[in-house]
Length: 52
Figure 1 (tube, rainbow, N blue to C red):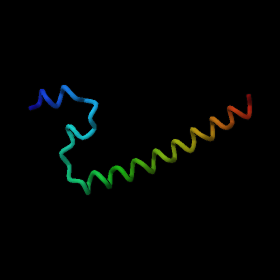
Figure 2 (cartoon, rainbow, N blue to C red):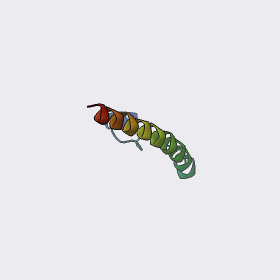
Figure 3 (cartoon, rainbow, N blue to C red):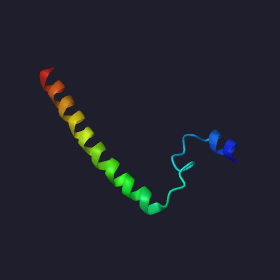
Figure 4 (cartoon, rainbow, N blue to C red):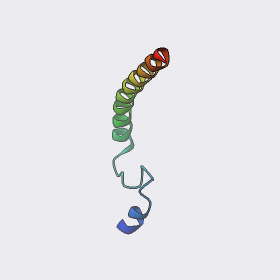
């Protein structure tokens, strides 16, 4: 069974055995951090476009 999970490492839910609530909470927290990072990336990209 472990070998079957190892064959598909691309699936994010393959090795995740946590309950849905914990998964959802962690997802929300990471989404907020990712949103801030994306905003900064967009800002830097916009500055890059303006400079060019």
